[in-house]
Image (cartoon, rainbow, N blue to C red; front, side):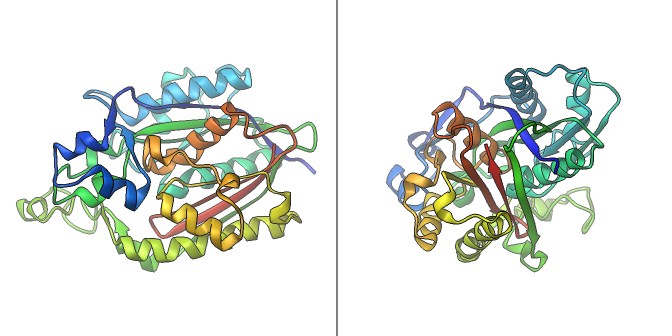
Length: 330
């Protein structure tokens, strides 16, 4: 049976570091308050003039170099993002141009924090069916430009960072590869984590009333997100193990979406595993939405927390609500 391997990974984060102390100067908050509620100590925000496609481009080049592939080799691009440079077209089209790729297929996936696993699952199908041989998947976000950086918007502002991660998918020539992927959505929860405007539900020409009401800023019902996340994460992780004929004892590392340290700790407790088996870098980057899992995967590889033959489980939960998982033999 054909399997899909991750042939190379790469990530890129902006140089500008925004500490909790920096945010104390912009709103009524404190380092202690942010750390105690999220585990975040700092995050990266882009400087003026830098867009999501810029971050995606840099991460893609690193992944291509790691996988030893050229622009000539890639035959599909899938980008996960909710912060594209333009309303349309997607970041994938910009990558196709900037990476000087053939006139191949390229599209974006708008599944928020689950988008990288969604992209991985889609790419896996193209490799398994033999339609494509080398696929670039990317998770990239510039959240900082969409935040209400004030005391009024602090609950969201303190959480989010900018960044990008990428991976090259190819056919595996050994036992390594994607073992299973699982995608879910419960759309009845959309208003618990969303950005309402602009959109076709209302007049896309933003009115003064909409602006005054802050409907163009992201909103999160933190209590509902937490309550659902600590249930869905363990469920979808176990689903990936059951489908792959594995147990938690077989897993070397779990890489969850970096939403909140308290969520990761609660998930570890429910699974009955120590935090040494759950990768975390949220203290450095905050929540980078679609970019969080590929960035974490890259750092886990860099830190030699993943070795050849290891079983790695990726898991996500985010707006939609969406949740997803992937079991991979490295």
